[in-house]
Length: 319
Image (cartoon, rainbow, N blue to C red; front, side, top):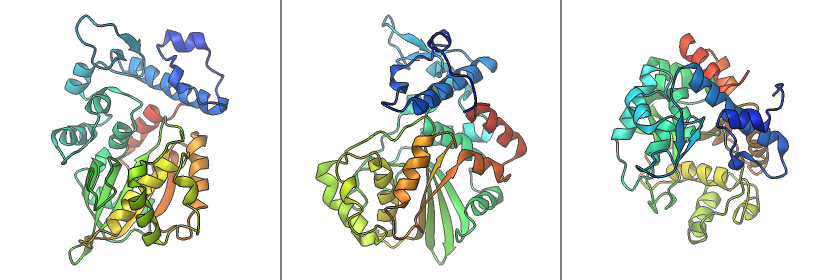
């Protein structure tokens, strides 16, 4: 990232030394994650926000330790300090007040964790909600081939939590743009933000595997034999499952969704997800439902309001 390597003393002084930031055998990715955490702590301090803790909401009398990349929960809920614009704050509040059936939403991290990607998705796209001409211009600047017009913007959304007609899982999209294709038909741009995350190997739920394989085969998007390696423990498993959730929408018996794309958005410096997206793309014979973009590319498109884009650069991208 061009900056001098952070020392343990510097990280500890900022309450940013976290064992979980270490990525086995990948020192550059470890440094990247530490740099992002430290940057969020600096952003918090420079804006005069108080420091949060682990746990996020400590019980009275229980032990807690300071965490530089978090805010106190009550303060965060009251002020919306995790969100950089009024519209993003309103979008976060609207999502917090909405309950989708059987949803699994971490409300504490949404408000108080400065590294939480679902919250950062609200920051990236909150000025586009509720959907208006700006949202439509932005989506078509980022995805020129997307059909229709933007009808709705949703956050931390699943078409059906634990619904077997989709994936029977708790997977969700950090942001989803619903497109009006005319004639009652819809399209979807489903975005997952990978900010501080690394491509940690995961194992899909074995009991759901028949459904995962069914959706993958029916999509005809994957090269022959490509998904075999994803059915066990894999660094691409989460990306596969999120892509499958989109594909299950396109295959839904209702026929409600006629076009869709799953988009992974990550900082350019997140080498793990830059590499993971490239490797995942090689598994596809049809790439029309998958793409990736860097946060820098989203901002460089110059479709967000200038003050918002400047605030996002300051918040998300260490110099």
